[in-house]
Image 1: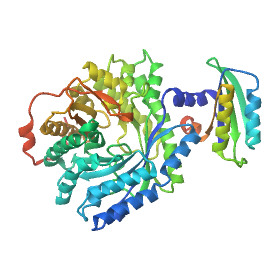
Image 2: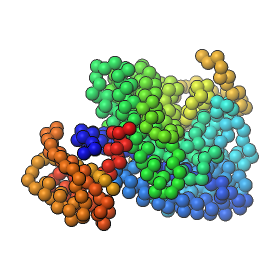
Image 3: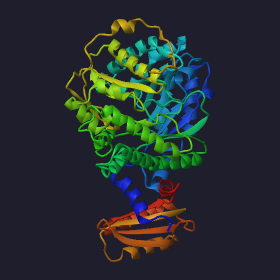
Image 4: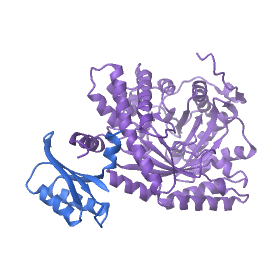
Length: 451
Length: 89
């Protein structure tokens, strides 16, 4: 036999007891060939392209999952930023509706790309587009939206930062009867990436090809399990164990990506080396940090532990995949991680500690519920802080924050399913509104003399 | 396709007979077989070849699953590619 029993049983144990799965196969589609000056016709072409190219995505994903005995949890589509696709026609909402209808037709759970890239400037059409985001999210089920507001090359577009604070508030208001759920489908970025397979921030960047498969792996439970056997070991040994485990997890992702792209007759894009938690017990990134030796996530030492984890995941994953991309690293979405929720409830995990942790993890402030009366300017200021961390450190950062209308600090909110539930977290009481009202552009940073 | 059939659970008479009969009925060739007690569990691992079977992976897999439920054991079949990917460079 090619394999010994221990190897076979190790894989089976990871699948059965440690929540190893492939989090998503995401088909990245270019919609440039759908552009025309009639918005309804653009919408029709968008619908046709998605339903034609991704017709078999769910079926192929489920078949591969059955054959490997490894669940492929989500099947998704990401498209070219709609602010680009709809500009010629001047209307964007019909395209959002077409995306939603197409997503329902092919049976995927989310479609990303109702997006704009405005890190340097905004065209009049993009300005109109940003105005439509709250309604687009409130009137669709599966459409996700993202806006890139900053980059290391361009600086931070503070006008757009101000606008997005307001749009997040509007999106919360329009879905007030459903825990402001529209905000869970909206993320803003600094240094957003063209090939991210994860929602809500997936879009297909302009330099991408016509149709490729991007895969997001997961498996925080597998890393936690491996570290349980390392009690008493020093940090170098911990990092080595994480690397080896990440290698195995990523090899599964690579296999799924190669198989899916061959069967769907499209190219293989990237594997995103991510540890993405779910609210399930044993599927928590926070628990890995606790296994490393913290009593609870959010305590002092959390940033260091997360940095070790994030770096080791990348080192292990890079050798396992021929093309690595996306956001690659550990995610820390508060409402989607059982242990993060607990720590936030107890007050160990605060927004300030989370912000510090985002300087070393793969994304940013993710799935954070705050009071419904939070001012737009405060949300914009939180976004500006995250953009600054991303721009200065040449990394992707993001904000997905939900000002839940009608809720105040101490209340709980449940978003359902993988989005989980969370306590309303307190924010700093200071007022940044004069800073946010200034507008303009933060100059791009100097990248020498880095201190 | 080459695949691994794994049977895990409490030992009882007739396991190999039932699984082998099922594979034989579907013209799935057993290339290697090993059994052992691991972590207090009976474990049987078969290396099989489905290339001559006409019914396809899903049908064989579903039938094995059914047998597993009947005799109270976990029986699964997985494409060998997953083990190749995770345990060999």
